[in-house]
Length: 296
Image 1 (cartoon, rainbow, N blue to C red):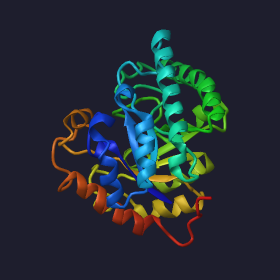
Image 2 (image 1 turned 45 degrees about the vertical axis):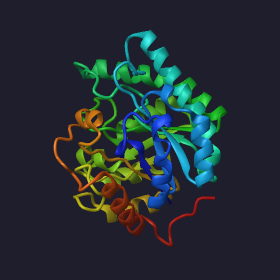
Image 3 (image 1 turned 90 degrees about the vertical axis):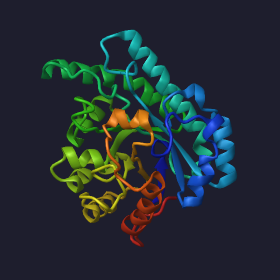
């Protein structure tokens, strides 16, 4: 198991011209990986990112950020084309960053199917048409990802952020429609705590189609200090043989743009660093086990 932290925990948007020293800070905290949120690809020098990460022995993952205007489920064809171009750019970046991962398969996670916070569909039929459009757009992107040795992972989000994929069953249905080994699921314990009846059972249902994992507390604070059933989650991850990364993605009021987007109105932890360092110590104890499959 490799452990990582998302740049959202510290800054937004990430800019290599300003925030490249964050890599050293994250490495000194003991993380194996940093997951970079690609809010604005123009602010991210992938070559510089890869070079510095290699110097530090730190892996780098690329994470999709799909807000207004980035929506593969949109009725507007121009918006879908622009979003597909953004995702191809993520795939290119992930392929360039792959050597930093030390054999871990490069994966692009996030709600790649549709914009977070989009206007909910008025009925089930409209919602299904949106899912069908997203699946159709993801098929060629899946092939492009496969050609570049990259996996895509579709993140199930809570009902307040999307109406398209809230639970594993909905995610599996879209995967079946895409029908590609290069696309799987991205699960997050924060969202599962809100939407799944049993998070461990959901992980087992995802099985070998689980490609990426966010380890987050139910209040977005320090992992291990809330209500997530971590022992059951760890057992389920072992049962399905999950060999990917476990990434902390939390938010604090200090990153004001993200705090507004995810409705963080109070201090959920003593500091950004506490979420990272204390969360990492907990997850290493809870998830790292001698019986855990090793990354080849």
